[in-house]
Image 1 (tube, rainbow over the protein chains, first blue to last red):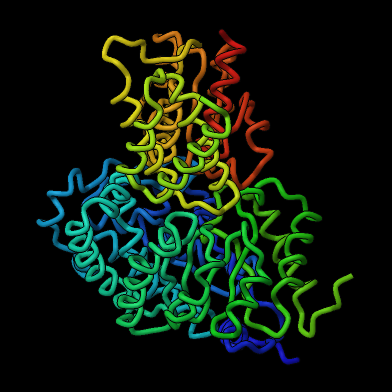
Image 2 (image 1 turned 120 degrees about the vertical axis):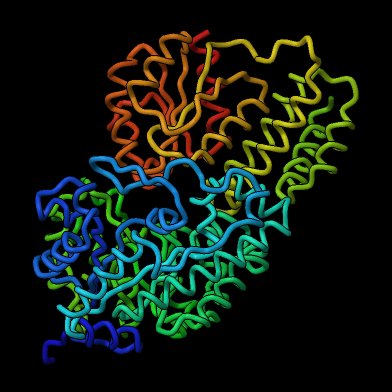
Length: 347
Length: 211
């Protein structure tokens, strides 16, 4: 089969057909800093660094996307939160921007075009889209309105609000929905090929399925219907098996799968209504040998790649900074070795 | 109380807690009559919370249910404890903290579970660095320290913490330890809890060993 571009390969897999090989999304948000020899705080200070970092990593490992996602806390930074950088991990948000439910009535969503941290991300998306020339997908990211409050107000205060203060919860969802749609569409306008809708709180790891069906999933449906481009659903390691049908109804092209769930089972349940993405263990990856990387890649490919409809990736959507380049190289080599279609029979 | 009655009560309590129904939980605990607060904590609340924690570990129970169960039990235990009673089962001084970041849900759950089982635990809060945590543990004479982490970089810092607190029993928990079962031993922790229920079992064991 003629070698495809990354874009052709991904689109073919998402159409539930077999491309030249299994597409893979390495999502090394922080490794660009190591590639450029910069501390993380300096790396994320400039869109130019992220563009160069993402570009070099994609050239080096040959994965099938560019991922100009800086860090999850960038969204609450836009709402005024302080972001704390560390030497070897993703920046986290400091004190919550919502100190009490009473403050929710006064919240106004920031606009992407007026927000310095978000403009930096948009600049990176634009530059990477220019460089990729349509040959490599540029993946944008939003945190769902239902999951963003974990960073806006802290997890326990948010669960208290969700369960005990329905009026304030509804109001917070309304402002967050407005923000999320604007932010997603700004990324698409800047050149992102698709948007990944990160929604760990809707996973059954965080809320029971019936609560997800009353809250997070209807919100996802409303928001995704207003996003002007293709979307994927990502529960960021959360479990989704019992809500796969609900996710398929969101009309997303793909859903990510937790390492705690069986890829083949989720793919079978998705029944070609959406593709699956996953589910390498990013935490264990830090100490994988070359052989272990090959085994993990092989296992995922044999579980879910037959017939297309599968993109190999980690299960969380962000690789820990501690994962060595050697492991990323081993994963890349393993995809080339085991991921060519037609697939070899499992030994 | 007859053991069959106790088992039935624990099951009813578990069901009411998973439904996040404060009223039913309160009325079930009201049925035990003159039992001491520590009997209620140890024989009824702790086993129900342990079952809920195990359900979380199996993937059958959500974090929201675990959190609310802990909160409801903590509030009820505080209410049934007479004002002049000792707040704790016997054992070493205990504290809990979140290393580095500000995500405190895991800590909150463990605090609620441990307190509901009748143990006093000092909450050092979140966003602490190793230096600060070591200082507080030394100042307070803590014998058992529970540390929650969200990100891998924080989990790896446990190694330095244990080096500096080698005479303190260090119990860890949080996402990195759930996704890599070898990690807690690698960083030198004395125990790892997969759930709030696990934390109660570990605290009960360490209280017996260290006391």
